[in-house]
Structure formats: C-alpha cells, structure tokens
Length: 479
Image 1 (cartoon, rainbow, N blue to C red):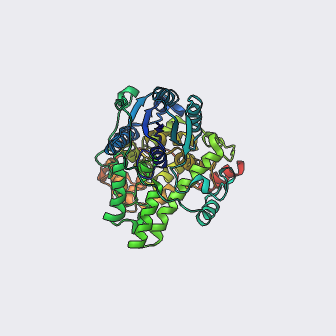
Image 2 (image 1 turned 90 degrees about the vertical axis):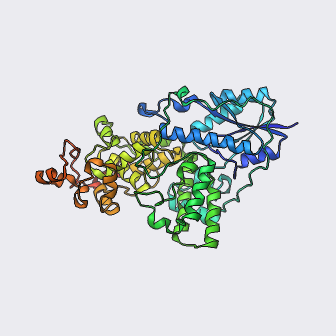
Image 3 (image 1 turned 60 degrees about the vertical axis):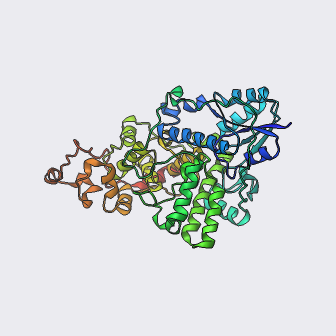
C-alpha cells in the first residue's frame, strides 16, 4: 500500500491543486495535513504582530472550509498545532508515509522550513509550485536572471510563456483512520479574531467556498469585470475592484482558475481593456513572487535590493500619528482608519499612505511594511514587502514613485465622501473643506463643528509647498 502525506501551506483549496491531485492519483491513501505553527504568532520586526486579528480570522475560516471540502470528498483534514519541522516527520513515522507532497513557497523562511522538514523525514519529498499564474518552470528566463523591472519581464513572459491549464479536483480523497485533531482555539496563540467594522463594505470570509462565490458574483452575477479598469481606483463600495486578493493570498483561489474565468467571460460577453487589466494585475503579483526567489532576504533590509544608502528615521511619534490616522491630512488618515477597522485598504490608498510615510515623513519604510503585515487580511509577503520597497525607492524599478496625497485625494475623492465616511469628526464639512481643513477660518470651524487641534489634529508637517521631487531624487542619487 502506498501512503502519502499532503502538507497544506498557502494552498487552502481542492480546486486546481496539483499537490493534492497528484498525491491522490499516486497513492492508495493520503493524509491531508495542516499545522498551526506557533512561530507565525511571535512578534515581528519593531515588536509588531506578525498576524493580526483580521487575517487570523480569515485563516481560521479558511482551514475550517478546507476541512469541510475534504470531508465532502470522503476524507478529512488532519490538524495539528506545532512546528511543521516536528509535526510532519512525526506523522510520517507514525503512519508509514512513503511520500510528502507539498507546495513550495518563495520567501526564505518558508524555504528554510521546507528544507528542515525534508531533512527530518525519511519519506520522499515532492514539491509543487502552485500559487502563481505562470509556472516557475515555464518562464523564458531562469528566476535568478529575470529582469528587475516589471515591464520587460511582463512582455517577455506574456509573449514567451503560456499559462498552464487548471487541474481537476479529486473525485475522492481516501484517508486512513487517523486522529484528525481539532482546529486550535485562537487563545492558544494569544490571538483575538477580529471582524471588520460595520462601516466597512466587504465582509471577507475565509475559505475556498467564499472565494469561488466572490469570483462568480463579481464576474458573472454582477457583471463587474467589464468595467474593472475604470473602477479599480475607487475607494468606497464592494465592487469597485475584484477584491480577490485575500483568497489569493491564502491559496483559497487559484490565479489560473481566475484566468480561465476571464477567458470564458471574454468568449461569452466582452473582451476589453478591463478583462486584460485583471490578468495584468495577476502578473504584477507573479512578478514579486519570482523577485523574492531571486533576491531573498535583501527585500527585508533597510537599503533593499538596490542597496540605496538613505538615512531613514524611526520617529515613533510620526509613525504613530500615521498608523492611528492622526496626521492631520484627511486622505491619509481616512485610509489608515479603514485598515485599522477592517483589515483592508484600496490599492490607491496603499500607494498614497506609503508615499506619505516614506517620502514626506522619511520614516523607515520597513515600519510601514510591518504595520501592513500586522493589519491586512490579504497580506502576502512578496506583494507587501515588494510594493513597499518599490514605493520607498529601494526595490524594483527606479522611477520617481511619489504620490502627492493632497492632489490624489482631490482627484479620487473629489466630493470628500470617502473622507467623511471614515473620519466621522469631519462628517459635517462641505466637500471643498474636507481635503484641507487647516484652511478653514475660526468662524468656519465653529460653523461646521470642527475645532482643529481638538476635534481633528493640525497637520504634523507643512506639506503645501513640499517638494516630493527633490526628496525622491535625492534618495535615488544616494542609491
């Protein structure tokens, strides 16, 4: 009898999961295993949480849904608490496992954990690259020599490689008689699971079932894909963007499955810039996954992969004002209040608050990246740290990436609706006062019931005549 173990990682699904499918096809029995590693819940850089309450809830729900999916196929999910380097080899010894099947990940810590599991077990070891649109082995260039700029890489990949077809989910998952174990209580890791606040527009529920439902709703039921490019910079609402990212980050949705849905949509309804743009964004996600394979831990260093020797500060007062949405700049503060209350923020918002932290306040970009890691429900190590490094000018590309938060706010929230939604203390302001409340006279402040410095903070820096171009060019010169 051939018995295998499937070690689930960030591939919490049964659809388009070649790791699971091959294990079932090549074995008489399989042990599907997920382990909650206590190291995930340790303090991270700057003493911040590695996993916050919003992402923790999504993770727990995703594991519960995976168990339900496997049970519907006649099996069950074995759940354990402990380091994978202990749990997986122990299960292999106990149940005479011939082969471990697992997803491989690009971050250095995950690669090291994988190697340690492999060294600690006598079982054969089969690794699968299953979380990107394009497969690692199908790239035109080896990952260690791919271009560090997105556009050349995209063109080379888009015209020289093909997206592999999805694989069918197993008809049945034969699992031996094993003590499956219960999903641990979050309190075991000193965690409090958080729900998004009631004034958030999307209630992200973890799991493959919810992910497939969201994809079907957005693409087919609401027919929103046809306008994705035009609406993706929105700030308020459920459907201005696809919001697939939390399910992609946890592997509840396969990017190849999304790609096939887009192709079908183009055949049946419309093929336009918006359908292309959704795939374009999936390629951005791919790009950072492959960049992490190439550069590894350099992405976590102060000077980044470009070794830019810039004098960052770690001003805690400025950082806390930014993190708490108390900078005195409504567009920045509204976005930070949203992430604090929901675990989510639009892409437009992320770019602006990151630019404000690094370009205006000169605060160490890694503090912002770590804060996002602790808060975001859709946190992905490569996308998060890659995008922060990019914004700080120490990562991929070298163009001037700064965002003028005043002009951006006035462009994308011209009537101030987004600001007033999240900054309730400013809800009485007219549209023309929401972006620059410091311009109000004392009489106007009295009229609208907003006293600056009391109800809402004064700006922490003078930004009216701030030269983004000068500071960013100075940073690039130092690099």
